[in-house]
Image (cartoon, rainbow, N blue to C red; front, side, top):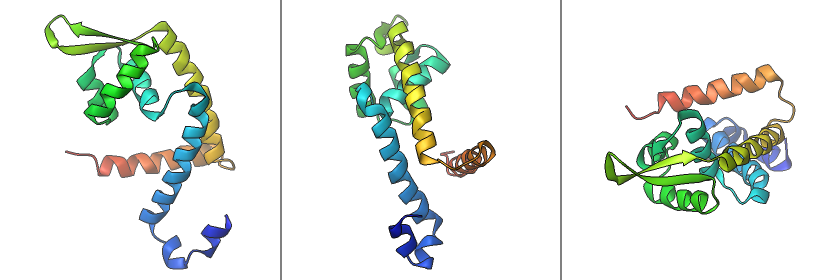
Length: 150
């Protein structure tokens, strides 16, 4: 534990809400540090990974699946399209909608981001065993599922 964590009162160290918030700050720093050399950010990764897993999607659906606000999706998609990592074309069935498709360059970029983010996970959880890491992910996922909009 670092000095600030050790200095915090027992009451503060016992609050899961505070601890999760503190860990989120560290996790975001690890992620940003890993992605910074690539010119990509968390939203870029979320969109690329979702398109890779789900295939072509409307811009609105990609936003819903990633939980990214509509205005932020537009900015991230503009950047990804400008970089040739995704294509954005009008939906032939509804010209008001845009369909996003991952390009070969986007797939290669995503592979690089995956490698960098794996390093960020090791930085965040340096002494965790594979089982401890899996359990940590399970617990975090459980919290998210319990608080998901219904």
